[in-house]
Length: 591
Image (cartoon, rainbow, N blue to C red; front, side, top):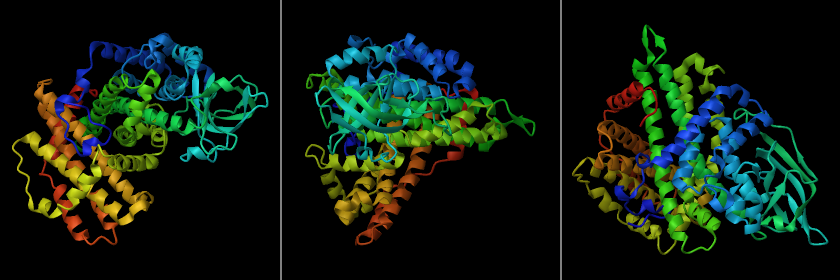
């Protein structure tokens, strides 16, 4: 079966045999993951306090050590001194590195947004000159997009580039802020407007060029070990051959690189969540109150189980879309001549899923770290414990790579745009479902088995989403995207459905392939997840319906949302306790 395109999961069924699940990692992938885990244990956890200080020299030293292991070149072709791993492996590496606190931010900024714009959009000369050295750690990269007056609206930046009289240089002037790795980066990807262009262009700037001034590191709430500073450009002479791509292509480069950053952030926060869950259960299995371990308390088991359920869903979706991207890369290799463009085009195709992982993942991690502090009690508020650091470091992820507010809009806007294409037909399907509301209300699902019941629920969630997309588009028309509260409702419904479907497909495949003898605990995870998803989707759906002031079918829409989100009762108390009991017995996240 051909893999689904971005957002097509809303209108097409996915066979569980066609999804990739983490249980299928091969030995090479497991070896890379173990190498990263060992590196973090030796180089990061032994000096967390030192690395939590804005010590530019120390962070650069640790980055250099990761380069010696070849970790910086995992996504780079062998022609440029990399190891050219597939996208699933890159995401697995990003996951494991997510447990490395501030180091993770520095590393991912360098290997991702600080390197890949040149790899994906640069010419052969630029790749040979810069990418090889970035892949081996000889050079460290930074990505310079944000400005004091240009955050979410990146194209409003004021940094300018004017062609010199002799035509050999662009004279760069402006200011960038919140630049990760600014304090020790050798190479900067800088976005600026040439002359009075409306659209940005992208340049390679070397930090040692005359006129480049690096400010002091910012004092931040978390990720304190990451060098974050402002950079000033005062008549910097950038060689014309350092223009990346075409003039005016910078905004497209920035957007596509952000898609890549978002999806890899989803893997990063997954690693951080697993580390935090292990910290939580370790403490719960040691701490006694009233003479017994707190891990025996129902309230603590609830927290542990919820940490697991949300993280497991995130993991399922992360590797599902990662394999989809790998498959599309292979398909595009025969259509696009440039290897770099192939990869970024494949990633950009899954913009909806990238935004979902970014939003859902960052909010899952915020939940996990918050409950970890609560499980630790007073000790969780102490800087002596790693969960305090994890709590502070987590908060930036809802802002990184475009705020969650922006990404929620991207989920719906991109889905709507794709839905208008002839080969997608989401709009037609939505209109058809809207016209069939009476039939839907009269129909009763007749599930034959456990999994059919779950996938019927998911199918109903999708119907509710499409009906409401048609309804809100009909009422608000061309201004629909300005109704951000309603867009948020629809976005959360889409995101939650994708996560739950990914989880369901994974559990179904695990059961079918007899991967574990303890399938019942995974069914518990699925039961609670679908149950909770139904209530969230119902709430968001009803809020969207109640925001419609002129729709004559409001009463009928309320009824159909209630019907399509109706799920059977689940003993969530016992299910969560069984999930928590496995975690408590393992004493680490091992799902």
